Length: 516
Image 1 (spheres, rainbow, N blue to C red):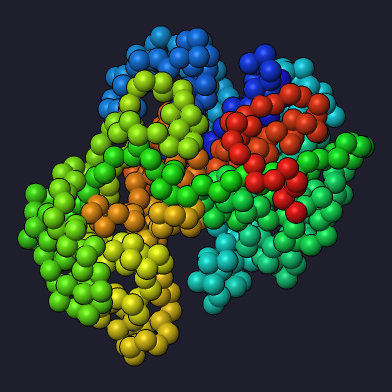
Image 2: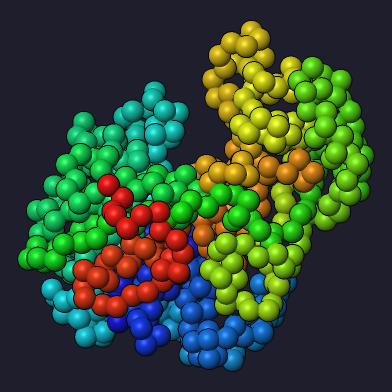
C-alpha cells in the first residue's frame, strides 16, 4: 500500500477515489495516513467516511446494520452503537482525519505528516503521495467578476497564498507524486500582479518536480492542464485544473486519462424516487398540504400566457398525473442504472437512501421552476429569462427594466438540468439556492437534492454527508468526483509500480487512445 496525505480534504472525494482502488489480491492500493479539513461539518463527514472504510473491512466487507440505520434516520444513538462496537476503528478514524486549518508559515501539520509517514515506514524521499488543493473561491472567475471593484482586497486574500501550505509539504516531505486540483480560474488569477498558475508551477519545479498533464502527454499551454470531467465518465460538465507533480529522477512516463462513454442525468438518477418541493416559511397563506393546489393554479396561470400555451401538452399532463406527496424519501425505487454497481454495490439488497430531501422554495419560484422544466422538455434547452412569460421575470431592476427580447445580465439565473446531458458544474453555490439546479421533471417542481447532486459528483449512495442541509450542499459542491479521482489514482499507482483496479475498468471506453 502507498501512504497518502490529503490536504484541504473537504468531505473526502479525492481521498475516496484513491482509497477505493484495489490490488489484484483485494488489498487497498493506497492508504490515507492523514487528511486535513478545517470546516467542522465537512470534517465530520470526512471522519465518518474513514470510519466507514474501517468498519466495512472489519465486518467482512459488509455494511453494519447500525450504519444503515444511521443513514436512514440520522439518529445519534445508532452512531453511538457503532462507536461502542468499533471503538478502535472510531479512534483510528479520528487519528486519520484531522479538523485543523493549514496556515502559511506554520509547520505543525507538516511535522505531523512527517511523523505519520515515519510510522508507516516512509523516510524522506520515500514512496508516498500528496493529494488535495487549496480552496477554490479566490480563483473563481465568477467570484472575481463580482468583486472587480475590490481588486486590492482580492490580491490580499489569504486564500491566494494557501497553495504555499501545500508547497511546504512538498518541500519538506518530498512526496514521490502529488496531485493538486483547482478551478479553471487559477489559469487567469493574479496575485500582486503576478500570474498565480505560473508562480505555482515555478515553485513546484524549483522544489524538484516535473509538472505533467493528465490529459495531454506534451503539455505546453496552461489550458493543457484542464480536465473536462464529462469526457471521462463523470455525469457533469466539471472543468478543473489538475496538476500531476512527479519527483525529479522518475524516468517513467505517465499515462493520461482515458475517455469513457458519456453518461447523462437520466442514467445517473435512475432509482432516485420522485419527491416534491415545499413552501418556504416566507410564503404567507400557503402550507405544504396545499402544494398540489398551488401547482395546479400555477399551471393554469401559465396556460393563460402565450409562452405557456406552447407547453400545453406537458403542463396538462402534469395536472393529470398523480403528484408526489412527500418532500423526503429514504429508499430507492429498485430500478437499475448504468453505474448502479458503483452507486449501490456495497449496499447489496438494502434500499436505504440518505440525504434525499427537497428544500423549500418561494411560491413564485415554483412557478418559474414549473415553466423551466416544461420548456426544457419541449425544446431540449434551458429557458433563459427572455423566454419567460413577463409575470415570471425576477424582481430585479436589470430584469424588470429590460425591453422584451433584449439582453439581460445573468439571464440564465434559473437553469433546469437536462435529462439527456451531463449536468452543469455542481458548485458550492447550490447551497445558497436551487435556481441553477432545477430538476427536469416538471411534476416534481423543485431543485436537486443533496443526494442527486452527490450522484452527479459520483459519490456512492453509502456516502453519508453530515451537518445541516446547507453544509451538505456546500460539501458536495466543493468536492472532487470520486470516480474521476479513482482514475487519477490509477495513473499515480502505475507511475509508482503498484497494481490498482477500479470501477471504471468495467465500463466502456470511447477509445483506447489518450485524451489528447
